[in-house]
Image (cartoon, rainbow, N blue to C red):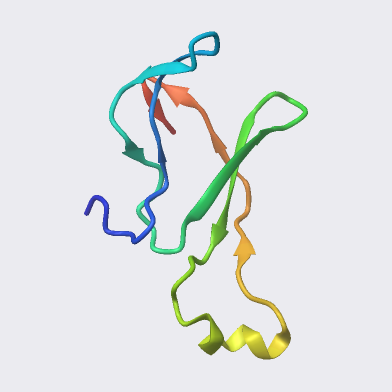
Length: 91
């Protein structure tokens, strides 16, 4: 089931040294295995929680044929998903 999307979205856990521009990190892990999960972005809310938003829809899917084109829109953002790092894994 892993890595079935054309564009995987995921994360690595590690350290970054801004003085040298180097980083050390572990293996890449997928954030989501859904087929419509693209370009995830995070932000902090007023309580300091990490929220993840992503695009529902990915490029290269015959966009000109989507039924929403008639209504002059295509793709949209997901609802926010709370995420946190627990035991070396994003939940």
